[in-house]
Image (cartoon, rainbow, N blue to C red; front, side):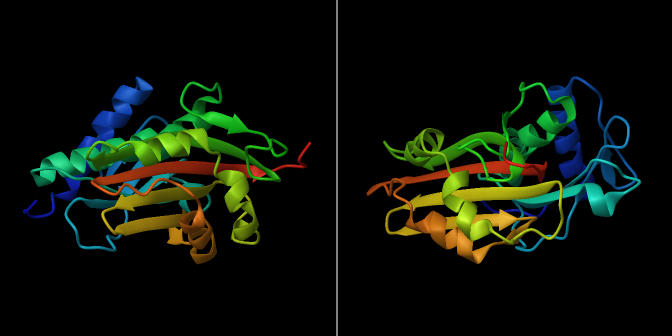
Length: 231
């Protein structure tokens, strides 16, 4: 894929269109952001790769208190054109990160799953909202890693490495991205938008599929809402 990075308003327009459809409420681009109902907004963060299909997105729950209510994440897409690749990047973000954030707003289980602080499939001590698990790849086993991620809970396996990793007591985003094939692989856990090396090493050591031909990747996102007593 060759091409120049899309203008910010074009990217934000794609984000606004997707969120409008998902929420059933209008989002629009104004003042350099995608503006949603009430105090909701999405801003483009500072790009840290320079790739035209890579986006850094900041979802702001309360534009009046952005430091306390912003959940940052990054996403990438692929395609024959920049427009196609960015469209896939936005869709991947909405299906994973976005689904957890929309669930936080409605709290009814329609967008993502809830795990109580004491749930064995969750993160001990935290109320977690687990977003969707998406995947992509090539070849006969293109969905192998996504299927593995659906069948194997990740939070309890990552929990020991994540102890003491959080710099605030609410609304912490944890992104998990992993996969590969044909001799190369990626395993990355990001907490609050920053790579967490210890958790990434744990992820890399898990027994998810490594296709001998083609590639397979999976991505998911968990929002840690607040600590709990584990009961």
